Each structure stands twice: as structure tokens, then as C-alpha cells.
Length: 363
View 1 (cartoon, rainbow, N blue to C red):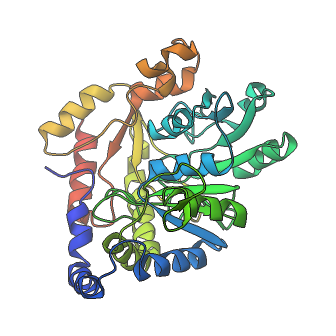
View 2 (cartoon, one colour):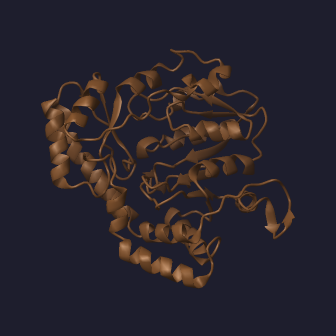
């Protein structure tokens, strides 16, 4: 079976370096909030051209801590997309705020900026655009709307590390940016990890406190926080990966270009190819009106595929109380029935990709 992502190939490519780093960490006696973590934060600041970055335990915590750091909580509203991984809305709910959904653009699959202002009320505190599948949102429009209404922008860039919008790194454009380093992500480790990025020192200082039980000085606590820290082994792996991320993303972009040779086939709708790094293809998702039949066919031919996402967030059982109905967000609902992801990662072999393309043509 050709899998969607070959995380073992990626880690194997750095195995000797990782083993050497782990040996150094063992000898150091520093395993949490040590030198590797501090160096990773410094190097990511330079990469993203952002003054403050804070390591946390995972991408979900990054979103929760971002919201907490901006004092978003009970009864506040946060506008986001219904077509994303559950963690985006879950983080809003975790701080007891209310997710308010807007439909997506049919081409980019990201939140449609034209629909945002109609959802703003006197309880709206922030907008969370999600750079879905690695494709940048239209940050210029979103930022203008946020500024006009005095709202925060929290970028969910968990699928888009290294991506750009108008030459700026995704995650470093809004007030706060959030990343996940889950093993399948573009920048990843062999466990969980996350990062918060911000321009604001006050926000950065609060997140540092919140991630460590609300404490700035050991055993003295300013508020109730979390245990959300990145350990030294994962920080070391991420430092190694950071050196390679541009090369890996360029490879993803080239492989997306190879898949674009399917554009002449009837029945397939391919993702929009864009110049530069506005799309770094965490996932390569295409559409087909016989999606489920295609998934079964590919599986029979030894090719894995995936559905992202089979049920939009506004229709999830957990959000029934919000009162959304089928038909409220028709674009998101349609895409949930048509989209499937094909194998995509920097270590996808040429012969594997050509076999996938051959089978898609045969179908």
C-alpha cells in the first residue's frame, strides 16, 4: 500500500543526526524547557521574521493558549471556518467562547472573506482563519476587516509551516499564529509539539506563563494555567527539520505540479496551483463526484487516500446546540462529499506518483 504520508522515510533521512542529538540531550540532564527548546524558538523567530515564538505541547494547546492570552472567554464569539480539523473550533469552546462559522470559498477551500462581516456582532472578539491543506487564506482582506472592527486575528497555520502570503510567512501575519508539529505535518517531529507566534511581548509573556501552570517563578502562580511544554528531544528534531523545511516544501510543490497533469481528465477538479509558496501542500486534495467509488478503487490498487473532512463542524453532534442545519454552509457541505486526499510528502517516489496518476486515469 502506498500511504498518504511516509513519516518513517522522513525521520530515517535524519536518523543519524537525531541519534546524535538524543545522546547529547541524555548527557545534558535537561529534558524539558532546556537549551534545545530555547534555540528552536530563536531559530523559528528568524525563519518567520517574528519577534516572539513560544514552544508548547501541541497545536491544539497553541490555539487555546492564543485565545487565553487575548482574554477571549465566556460568551465571546470567534469567527472561523466549518471546514477544518475539529481542534480549531474545539479550542474556542475550551475557553468557553462560541465558534461562529462562515462558509468557504469553493476554489481555495478556505474561509470566504466576503462572508465575514455579516457574522460580526458586539460579542465578536476574533477571527481564526485556517490555512487549510497548506493554502494561504486571503490575509489582506481578513486583516482589513479585523482592523475595521477592532478584532484580533489568530492564524491557524497548523497545516502550513513555511507557507507565505505576499512574501510574509504564514502564522506571522496576524496578532497570533499557531502551529502543530504532529508527525504528518510539513514541519514535524516523532510525537506531539506546537508553537505560538506573536508580534506582541505582552501576549508572549502571558503564553510563557500559561504553558507552565500560570507560573513565572517556580512554585508561585499568577493564574491557573496548563502543563504545555515541548520536551528537548522534540525540540532537537524540529531544529534539524527546520534546516530542511524549504527543500521539503519545494518538493511538495513540484509533486503537486506533477499531479496537475490530471487536469485534462473529465470528472476531476484539481487544487488551484499558485506561484511561490502560497500553497505548501500539507495535503493534496482533489474533487470527484464519485469520490467514494474512487477511494475504493484506489484502495484496491494499493493506494491509500483520505477524506478531509467528512462532516463539517457545524453538523457535528457536539455543536447541535448552536442551531446550525444542513444547508447553512452549502459549499463546505458539498466539498465534504467530493474531496479526497492523495499521497503527498517529500519522500514520495517518482515511480509511486506515476503509478497513482496511471490508476487515476484508468478510473
